[in-house]
Length: 196
DNA sequence: TACAGGATGCTT
DNA sequence: AGCATCCTGTAA
Image (cartoon, rainbow, N blue to C red):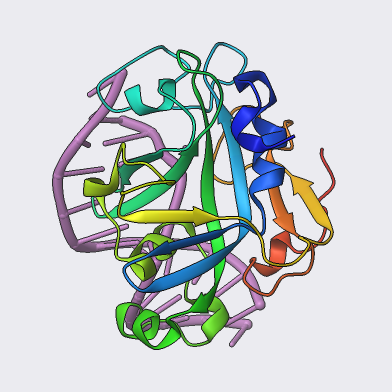
């Protein structure tokens, strides 16, 4: 089953399936290596959508296959792939990727990156590398939007799971997924953490 | 390698 | 006030 067809109640499975997909924008392509699932509704207080529709999060309630972009700490942007049926909030935060095309352009956009594996090793870094910002909010990933999502070229490999980053609540829910051992994933996430 | 602190603006 | 972050400096 394709992640596009999964209901919001299975956004964690959609997140898993998104690993290995390729996101292209502005002449750079990234292979997704780390993602996090977020759902709306009372079960997930860590989600932007858990208190219902607001001006910021309304895209999360829309149709699957579009981008939900938000600004964080006043200067960074992060992107989610909207999942689930229309009317139910679900999205997958794109936390990290490996630059597989346009690496020269990517380096000029992220001069602070010491190694190529650092270029998109973080949700806001990934956006910088792809040169995407709030203008990409609510745009389609399969069509005429600024960013395009394409299926994996090779099998995704082994997947690890653990608690989400930076969320103080729901720390017991292992809704972060990453490609096991991938160098673009931070060291402390490389091995399956114990779920305390 | 690890941690502390600053930059900066929108959301609640 | 707090935030689904990143970068730089300092210390070990």
